[in-house]
Amino acid sequence: MSNPNDQNYFYGQSAGMGQQAGYGWGDATQGEGISFDMDSNFGQDQNFQSFDYSQTSGHPSTVPNTSASGLYPALPQGYESSYIGSPPNVYGGQFLNPNASSFPPTNMVSSGTDFEDEPPLLEELGINPDHIFQKTLAVLNPLRETDAAILQDTDLAGPLAFVLAFGGFLLLSGKVHFSYIYGIGVLGCLAIYAILNLMAVSGVSIGVTVSVLGYCLLPMVALSGVSILISLQGLVGILLTALAILWCSLSASKLFVTALTMDHQQPLVAYPCAMLYGVFALLTIF
Image (cartoon, rainbow, N blue to C red; front, side, top):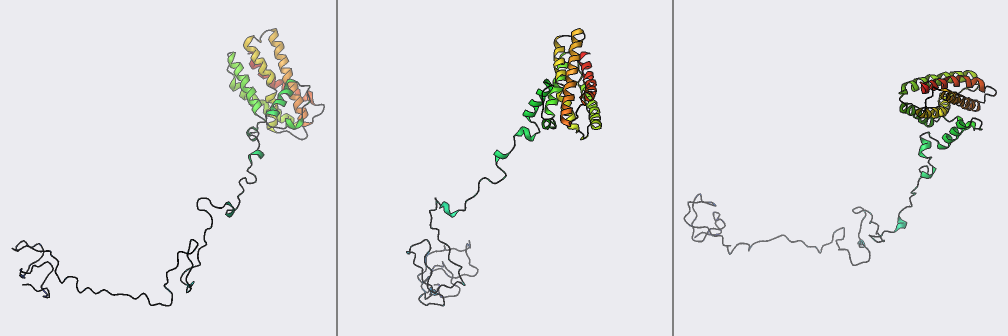
């Protein structure tokens, strides 16, 4: 018989099974089976340490009353701030619908970013449709009075459009002269710019020179359009070419005199302008 108080007794040993040397769990040499029945003495002498919660220490251990009103209960009487920080502020509004007055008002539109104060896109790009219209009318009617401030605008949108139209009409008549138009135009603008700076007291910028000469190319554009329909090498063509040269030079000289306040010097300005537009007329005829 095996005694449970024996130091060689192990858990699960049957009462009729003797202790054998070298016996262990899963030993296949044992003839008898192993029983896993709970012993009657198992768990009788289990003594656990007990604690007395009735004793009070330096800090009270009373459970706070959670039935009080508010989200957080009141702190006990012996509360010391050295262990716990200040109590949190209780949120008194609704969780899904907060009070709008608790948030500071924000200025949605800041100063300097209002779209109403911004200039139009064409004006930011340097394109003023009103100035283009006024300069075109001044070219079509050389006797019309024009504001000098408009002529100081270095607008190149109109001249670029007129130059492309001039080259396009020549292309339709079977003449590919884009390189000649570009080269003669650049050299002519530089020559007129140098002459005006020698004649005018205040001087002129290259942008104003190019803008005025480009706008005054409009009669020559009309002449190139006529060359598609009829030949300019006859008598009618020569008269139309002379009229176009006179018109272009008169308009250009009038605009330069108005912009630079060059009184009684219009014939002196018209002569070099007529030479420049005469070269463009030769490209149109031949």
